[in-house]
Every structure is written in C-alpha cells, then in structure tokens.
Image (cartoon, rainbow, N blue to C red; front, side, top):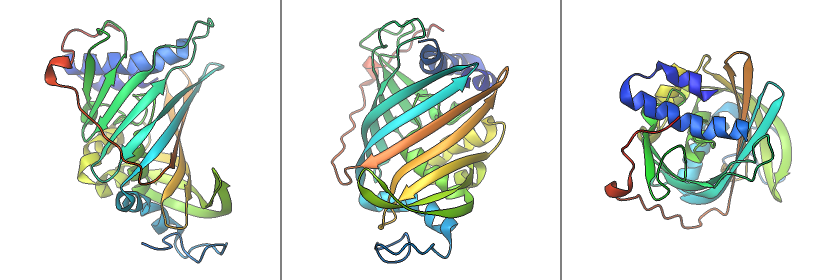
Length: 280
C-alpha cells in the first residue's frame, strides 16, 4: 500500500520511512459569523460552495483547538480493516496528539498495542510502533520526505492536514443540511487537488502536502465535508486510491468536536528518540 509509494525515497532515511509505513499499514492489513452562508435553519445553498469549503481550515485556526476522532478504512484483495484514532488538535499552534488503535489481525489475535502519535509541523513522532523499536523509545519521521505527506502513513490523517487539504477544493456541490453528532451542519461534496492545496496551505503544512502532490499517482481526491454555521469543519471524509498489484482504496474520516478544549503536546527529549535500525 503506502509501502510501494515510499520506494521513491532513497538512502537510510528512505529505509526508515518504508519501515514506519509498513509498521502501521501492513500490520493492520495482517491483523466570524455564519461563514457557511445564510442564517441558521436556512437551507439555501451558498453562492460559492467551493469558497466556503476552502475557508474551513482558517475557521479552525480562529477556533483554536478541538477534540478529534479518526478512522482509516483500507480495502484490498477482499480484506477490509479499520484503524481508529482519538485525541486533540491545537490548530493555532499546528500541533496534535492521537492514540491510534490497530485492529486485530486476520488470525483473530488480540489487538496490537495502541500507537501514540504526536503531530507537529514537518514531523510525526510515534511510540509503541513495534518492529524492533524499544518500548520506551519514539520514532521520529520527517513528513516532508513521506511520499504521501503523512496523509495515510500514520494510520490516521493529521486533522490539520485534512482541513488544509480542502484548500484545493474544486467542483464542489452543496448537498444539503444534516446533522453530525447532534449538531446541524451543511454537507458539501467535491474533489480537492493536492497540488493546489499545497500552494495555498499554511507554511507548517505546505511541505508535507507538496510531498504528497509528488507521491500520489493522481492529485485528485474526492471528499465529503460537513461544516457548522460558523464555518468550522465538523467532519470530513477523503477517499484515496493506490495502484499496487490492484487497486487499494483508503477512506480517511476525521470528526471534530469539543471546540476550545485545551490541547497540550509535549515532545520527547532527544535521548528518547530511537536512532537505530528499524526492522521491517
């Protein structure tokens, strides 16, 4: 899956990234105001749905922070697995933390140990990622070197990147009004262009999206986005596809709630970061 995308990387760093992607994806497969437009309760479509969706990331930055749940569903060769995550994101300071739960393997063994992920500009930190890494150590990955920009490698799309990816929204249609977790929202559907999103993204996310624009076989990513009456992204679902001895479909869903909840991210000291060889 992501593993073959990473073969474009060279040298020792590339080998480490390859192993990181394999650890998450392969292990799983084997085991301010009304920016939305119109007053509340008004179901008339906005004049420019694409512009509304492109502004979702800015609305989240103004909000500051939120709790997040993620789900990444992968389907290939008749096998379908879902990796789930939960945590919080500080949109203002571009940082987040997720606890990613891998499913039981196909042989019915118990679930893998949860992976703690720290999301910061240009980097992904992972603990309990296994494959030869000591239990008390972290693995640090430069997301600008990942062929997918960490849109799928970590088993969860960084919620900030998921929002920034919408900056490339195009051919957007307004589906209608609905509810997400009891909150009234407006549903938009369209496609986003990774390259275009990278050019418009905030500086902290731009490098990772630029890498993704080069690494995916196509820049076009279908999405469904749900925004509340303040223009904040409540839910977004992106659908990625890989060609790797057949088509591998990846659906990444991010749910945001608890806006304003404080989020604290503490990076590990340099002595706790594993620098040895990463087993495949």
